[in-house]
Image (cartoon, rainbow, N blue to C red):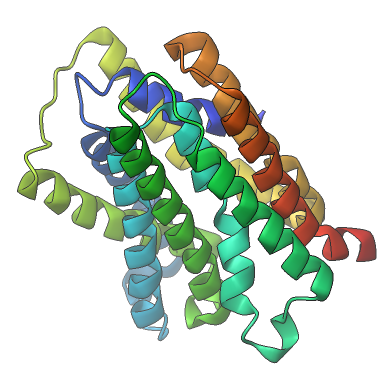
Length: 281
């Protein structure tokens, strides 16, 4: 169910982009989530919540998180929702590359093979142009890929920073609060603050805020405490599949053979990178 919801979010933002730019939608979504998680942290830890030394790494974590969504929001202006969700979900590859410089996280030959397969998939998918202008689609795909890079590096900061020892609510608060400020400022500076509150736009903003940024995050972190992370990572690969299917069904996103082959290579590469952990478990 989470994969279905996450796969739908890019399509929902793309579908209402004419009424509210994706970056503005994200700023509102994270603003509402910040209020929720801020009240949670304040209730549990009080005013001294940020005196535990996690603030610097928390701000760094939030900054990387913000960059991810700036790139993701901008990507939807140029490319299709289907392309966007696939390139965003290259993040585990960049997490593995970012962590492999640490002795305990170095990649095995099999994992390096997975990285190569994934990057071959990226190249093939880049060649899968639709009826959109090639340069426009390529720009959007590249922005979505940069979003995947930032998402991957966000995981590295979370794994290695002091913020890793924080409570879940505080960790999420660092990310959504920083993203609210950064994305709001970016939307204002680039003139992307248009907001037409039609019933459809209102429902989409409510979906992004309460279903994605609050409910799905809570369910995900609950799952991480109940089940093996490796199995959850494997199942999360269904998200871009659902994203592509929703893009085709609801927005009419064209999918050509090269993009389909590239997508399968990317997902196979991510699976191979995580295969050792899955088999060990």
